[in-house]
Length: 176
Image (cartoon, rainbow, N blue to C red; front, side, top):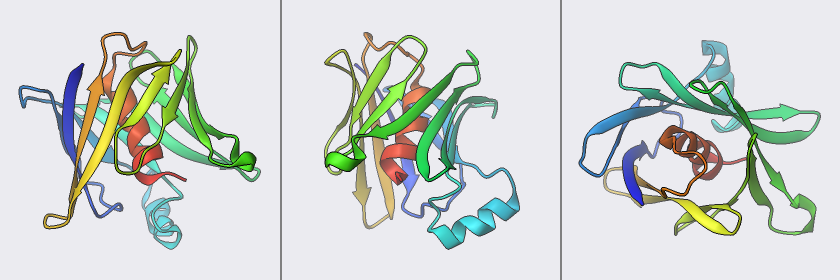
């Protein structure tokens, strides 16, 4: 598995881009929380910075690669992922809300992926009962930041690290 790391600030309202590094420590991409406009950012403060939720991963030049955002419509909540390179859209939603612990699923054009969310351990991305990626955030109280790790398998149907990082930031780090 390939390993990627980045920092996520403890202050969830921060919009500062954070570098994503590969195993050699080289910066490959950036991840940042984004708002469409200042009004949305202002209003988001009233909702604990969890309503107008959007994370974008860019290349080092700032061009968008992948984006995940939260959507509310008719009393339902889901996330939508957009791959700017392939122009594909993904739906990320919770299932089984009413019968206990909700399960998180990513629906793509060629696969369905389950995400097993763990609060203090690795959260697993699973396709056909195989773990194809893992994501984990460790909090450091002294620096008020998280060290975040993504492990990506060569067997993963999507080899774009931006896909996993944007989805994990929106759904696992912030959530509903």
